Image (tube, rainbow, N blue to C red; front, top):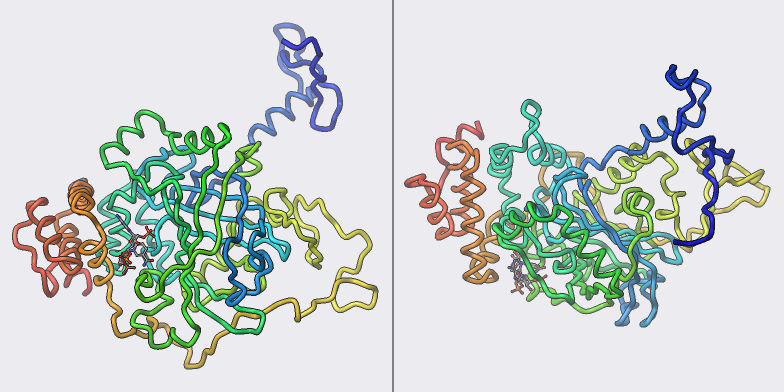
Amino acid sequence: MSDKRPPHTTTDSGIPAPSDEHSLSAGPNGPLLLQDHYLIQKMAQFNRERVPERVVHARGYGAHGFFEVTEDVTEWTSAAFLNQVGKKTDVFARFSTVAGELGSADTVRDPRGFALKFYTEQGNYDLVGNNTPVFFVRDPSKFSDFIHSQKRMGDSGLRSNDAQWDFWSLSPESYHQVSFLMSDRGTPRTLRNMNGYGSHTFMWINKGGERSWVKYHFKTEQGVENFTRQEAAAMVGEDVDFHRRDLYDTLARGQEAVWRLEMQIMPFEAAADYRFNPFDLTKVWPHSDYEPITVGRLVLNRNPENFFAEVEQAAFEPANMVPGIGPSPDRMLLGRLFSYPDTHRYRIGPNYLQLPINRPQSPVHTYNKDGAMRYEHNGGAPVYAPNSFGGPAADPSRYIEASWDATGEIVRTAQELHSEDDDYGQPGSLYREVLSETDRANLTSNLIDHLSDGVEHDVQVRAVEHWYKVDAELGASLAGGLGLGAVQSNGASAATKAARA
Ligand code: NDP
């Protein structure tokens, strides 16, 4: 024990606190008094300790580190933080489950968020990815429906496998991602043992204005390791905080967690007649078409000092793209450009970008002002642009607009199909050509387990019809395992026809 006396407690206004033990009362046995400002402040502040939890990705853990460029990529992008081999940029990363609430367990089956904030000299660059290279839907209008199907039901407050399979089997574009989710990659062993993917297609623009389409792959240098379904379930009972604890303990021991960034780069003109729609978030670019090239490494080496201030208040937004990097026609990406900052304004307030974890390390000169909890102000500086009083003026030469050609009637329709676009080919390749025999057996068993748990017969039948189209052997194994008898492998069953009607 230290001899040094601790500082005296104060109110939040810095006034010495009357007591850490006793409320103010009228006599030792009498009522408490409204004039006990200290008690009232404590109770009122406590009632307001929580901000609303994220609608998705509520449960997460984060860490600080850096990104280091290891290869010259100036041929493709002018982004300043990528313009020199050896250059390091501070990064904050947040990993999360998707559907579970703040207090849920770490090792449940779910995709994992893999969100990165690069504090670059040109402002913050956020890459808000997952541990899978694809996603369940390709149009943002289906996103909230998809999430509702994964979360709790209105009546029981319980999650429902029936709702999940109902949605998935009516949205066959989800089957590629469901293949990842139901494989053992849906239950990563630790956060350090999984890859991260930007998932969307983005644009890189070089100094000369030449454009390329790119995909980001962060490959774990710890190796991919997963739990089986049984191991993941056992860990829920043993330690709900297992992933958070593992990362915290690793960094606290002085060890690092490292990922190698590899990029796939497609020439701008190649997109138009590529065999897959390169902007469809349910598809990958096969490595044999665009071989990933190493670009740099992501190193996490420091735990947050305050979970709430850093992990909970961290606000990532895919719209934060620095000059030299831009969006693409990927509709999910375009939807996310709006939805992330919108949810942050609701969840932590309009001035969330002034919080230390979100504040850029580069200077900010903006005409946005005031609002709840704003604490950095421009004093008497001009509050409008243009002005003749020396206020900041936009310099378009510093900003590169990421653009592509767009013409046509305003329509509500799917994007045009490319020659090999379908919903079954890529999950079929994953099943037949990538998964090991053990992976395939575990995928099949995980699917049977999930589909057996409260899923109605008609939904099971419709779900298995799609698996037949992914792979006939897989479809037959599932039909056998679920006792469905002869599910048709081609054409629609009565259940599917009814659902489409
Ligand atoms: P490749 O054989 O060139 O690459 C397959 C990739 O699959 C591997 O490089 C690895 O990427 C990943 N992988 C390995 N084991 C598993 C597993 N158990 N579960 C999930 N992914 C695994 O094939 P293609 O590029 O032609 O892709 C074939 C299929 O592989 C795709 O349809 C897709 O389902 C899957 N895949 C493809 C990726 C891509 O970006 N092309 C990325 C991941 C999966 P990694 O090191 O990134 O894990």
